[in-house]
Length: 338
Image (cartoon, rainbow, N blue to C red):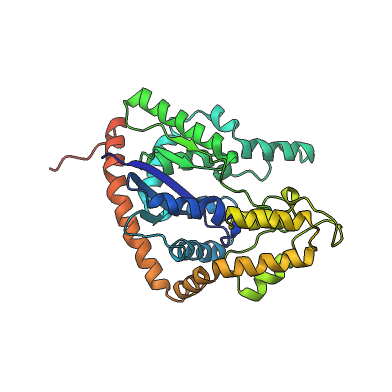
């Protein structure tokens, strides 16, 4: 039976948070247990250099993310689990793809256009102020991540759909010029995947500094939950759970029965202090075993490194033959022995 290749990456620019877990890590690990799926999961450390210029943060984040996946029961023997920079074939493919990618396509990338518009709005005098080539050509590196393994499906958030479309465009252009070498990947956007709100009510994101780290110690977890923004409704006044970050976070971990009971609490006017304390107790119970495993792994970095090294070898065994095929297609061929 031919397996479907599914690829997921997380940028190593910060500590994994609740939003990362429910939006990417949990569904990806669940998918990895499906017999007809060949899963590729990677730490996107090369991507992190676009936004993060703190070497210690990039390094620490790599191991925090790897330990998080392993603590959440990822089986590294069943998937291909690796660090992006440990597969040099990706960077080499990125350059080859760059040479067939139209600049006009990159001009339309949302992240680049947003930065240009910000510069214009702030009257900086230079529309490209502060824009690096890493930011500008980010979609090409993402295309290389995907096409290197001919992934059929890539789970993404709605904000990443454009990048998948660009990867398809780049693959199609290469195939047109040099023959069919790449599968055209499909974006998988699950309507059921939760996008959590953060401490301030906006989307939970490292960019907004409003996250709740997944494995923060118990006392810190309670402190952060108590800081979640709520409205001024008093105890006894009915509250709307659908507009509440507390309820949204609870619902991402709860059963249907638990969600229904929580709905009733909101309708009956439960106080914010009670709702926050109950959310803390519920989350703490749900995460404590994972947290204990994570803490053990962070004390055994040698094991985590060993897992990543084995994963890189496995990834390269797939990447090298395809890269050699692509290089021959563009005219870069092995020298003959003399």
